[in-house]
Image 1 (cartoon, rainbow over the protein chains, first blue to last red):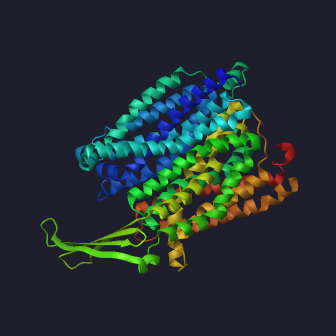
Image 2: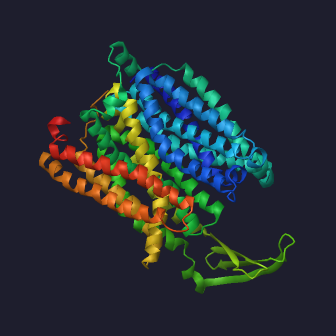
Image 3: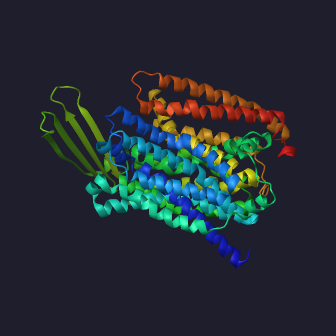
Length: 507
Length: 76
């Protein structure tokens, strides 16, 4: 490849990736600010608003994303990749911006949650159409021998989008102060989106259409009905099924486990302090993200199939020992003999809102000899009418330096599995389908694998832990891992037998 | 390899039936449970109306294709 070609390709990758990154940013800020959004638009005391909230949470991720994949995939195969992912970018950007403009439930009543729901659904729809477009567009510009390397940049955008959303939220919160942020400042990350999207739109608009698509169009070989050809014809549909059950299903659960479940486990099961837990995952992500490109590149040399399946298989084999080690690392019960300092700080009875109810706050602080510290805050509300007390306990462990880095290492290992499974997948999917139906065919299995199988990970894990607790198993906190382990094992089983390593099946 | 693919069709189809059995029994139990809130029910509706049809339909069709030799080396 010449220097000019490489430079041109770098520009294409950068322009495509920035747009996709912004779409992920837009999608994630809603999730990251879910608690505040809920108080502003979906008061839990109101059942209708609470129902709309649940719909907004689940529908956007599970139902609408695959529909977006079908709708925009079809469009992309009919009119071209460039215009389609320009449309998804605009829809996503406008929806995000408008969420930041909606008056609260207290100002306009039910119209507020209804509007948020509609805009959230539009976000899901746009996201469903974006990824396939960006991956296809980049792949169709890339030389076949380096397709894994170039498309792996697109693969980093989901992680970077999550990063960006957290950074913007934290910076806004720090600049405005917690009170202002919760009052109106939470709107800033949403409103900022319009600026980012406008810049990305201008860049993308200047880009040319995919040369491979233009060639197919010039030859008059454009599909007249991409949906029918993708899913109605046995020859292509069998590849859609293979992509789903032999690759994206397992890759989706590995991705969610390594990034979201790890954070949730550290915070909720290991009780690691909020800021420290975010640092652990952020450092691991910083270590893991470049690996997407490395494994994408390695897939050009050694093939996609075994790199992806090895990443999933490693997750299947290693998750339980890794999470057990994470639990042990944060477990303070073994440290009790080494206590250097322990103090009950206060127990304060106080009157609540002028009523006769009382709130007792008990704070227990322990510092261990190895510098690990533990803080427990117990809030007990005793009601004047003698009804059952309400108890809320918050635990926060601050790991010492050595345990902190052990935890980073354990999360980073999972990111290696994620990078192996996720880095080469865009190239793999693109090469599985012919140009005329590529956008449609690859988008659906990707969004079913990631949105549905991956997206259900937190829910399924919680359910499995609940079953395990009821049956009295010794390590119920590890039971949630059975979901990614089983799904991953099925994917490896199917993928190993049915996927044929064929890097250049389609250009 | 072709023979292995055809044999594999049996566990794939069995898996489809197992998934639908597991999902249906749990989803129905959770959805019809007394005092179940919408937050608790909603994921099970997703399982029932989205995950299960995809898993059952997809795996059984894939198993059928594998059994009929659609994934044979000559047809890939």
